[in-house]
Image (cartoon, rainbow, N blue to C red):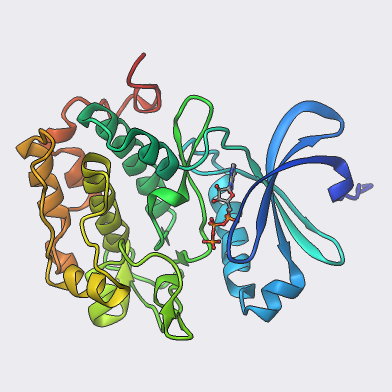
Length: 306
Ligand code: ATP
């Protein structure tokens, strides 16, 4: 039987257009396929030298492994990784292009989302998160910057560099992962924290452990933020933010007419003890999400204004 070598991709297959943004170890460009100019991608370019210098090899490898394993099933709520390749200087991730940018940018533009929009986004995050968790993966860095919007303003979760991949012998229900200070929000470099502190779970702060519940905690922070415009726990510095998180010190402003139903849901998510925290399947049954037809993917993923 003859075998064929798979065609290797290279940066020369693409026309690189404008820069879409850059992260701590990468720059992302819009790019089109030279052979099919209608095919548009976001290509994340990571400098090998920079990754080694900044000790980011682990994060890049995790991101690639997670996106490869999640990507096989083409979930609409996860950014798709089409190919990876490298040349002498860089690693390249060819990703689906999120034309409408970050959810955070949309929130800044709108100031707050009303409850219908919040339900629409929340349902999509839950659907994607359920899928991620079902594969034994904890995202561990969920926040509106890490959620991108496609052309129909449907969400795609991205940035899996901090994710934890369950090993076969982990207990799937009660998985907790020891951070060993490797969580990007908790890596203390030159006495300033890298990343955003506002979504870190109390179990990570108190016991240096995170689990599926830590992603649910971040979801609770985001629901609050959708409705109030800002995340629930904010201090003048990271330490003060952390103190507020473990003291569960947050307050609805009562500036907007926010239903008692959603406040109840957020209260059930934001519990210091992860064992007391509502699970994703319980959240799906909560009255605030009554209108969501969980069995009809099309409806979850169709726009609220349709
Ligand atoms: P860090 O890696 O430091 O956490 P980051 O996640 O923002 O930062 P990148 O993943 O490199 O870093 O993304 C940089 C920017 O590029 C993002 O802020 C986002 O706005 C944009 N971007 C990333 N991926 C895509 C995509 N698939 N489509 C459109 N824009 C994207």
